[in-house]
Length: 65
Image 1: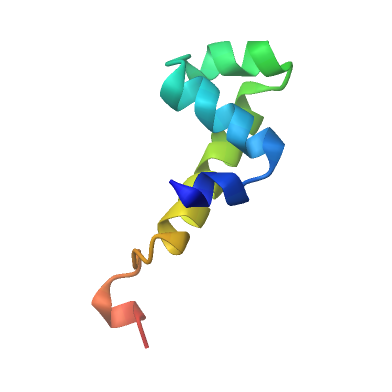
Image 2: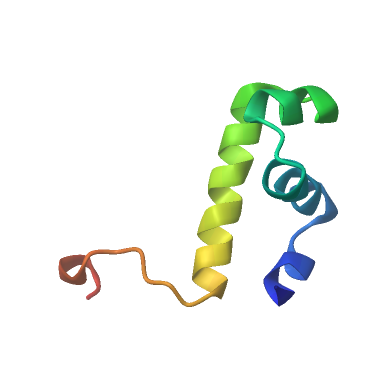
């Protein structure tokens, strides 16, 4: 997916550890030397960015005004 190339190296590394290498959030945190909460917040921001880049609308119809 072309969008992965647009992620920062730091974010791409996290996505690859969790999605491709199938590490748990805890294992990814340990591998990267960052807190678990940081892994969770980064993955949330990454998912929002990827959904937006894919053109997926996340807001209910009533909020799309």
